[in-house]
Length: 315
Image (tube, rainbow, N blue to C red; front, side, top):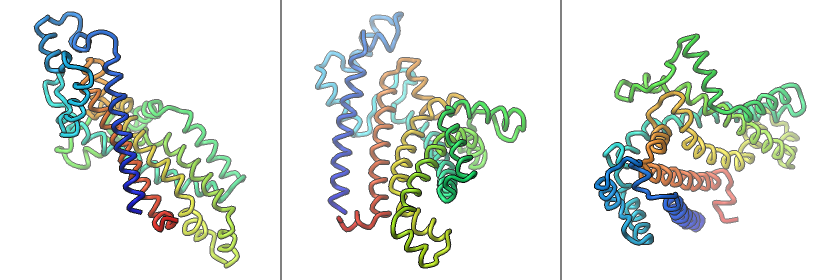
């Protein structure tokens, strides 16, 4: 088990290094002068010279990459010229919105999808299964921002149960902050719940055909115990894989939803940074998202060992 974790850590570190090289290279391959691109065509020569010096554009490419990578490892993501603030401070401020939003969406997706997937698998080929698969197909096909617009119209404009957008801040209290995240979380969760429900159903159907399931039924165990105690645990490997991928997607997919609901999170920050050509902020947020994907994948690997005893014993 320890060797397995060590290998995953090494793979994660190498992946992070490769991703940093790709992100840095993409920014360097942008046509034109990066300082001119960030400040615009009307920038003064003095401002351009100052930004070039701050970004170290006069140094060799490898030197700048090593310096940038070392700064990130030490927590220095650079300084935003738009906000005149360290990038790490901007990220720390905005992640308090994006991370709870992604976690809430993931919780809602899981709570909806797993029972629905089990229900459909237990009624394979029947009306309930066909209806659920039809609904999940719609959920997969419809983009989350369309769900967001429908939810805003129904619950904010018509029923007036929740605000249509904005975020009061956690300083206003836990419930006002959570209330502002409910509709965005539902809009993010519904398409992901559709995908996860289909995966859960497929994994359960495969598991329900195994010999030990037939043995459990032959022993007289009730159908509920067979589904939840025996079949579900052995079907969790593909479900955990999708959950890990979904969390990374939800964290990155907040770019559209946060702009629809006007939430001051990472998604809105990176959108503003792109429109304002603040490349330093874009680099920092992209690397943060890459790191989150690697960490989540490591946690999913550890969860595999918790679900499957063979991984703990090295079998």
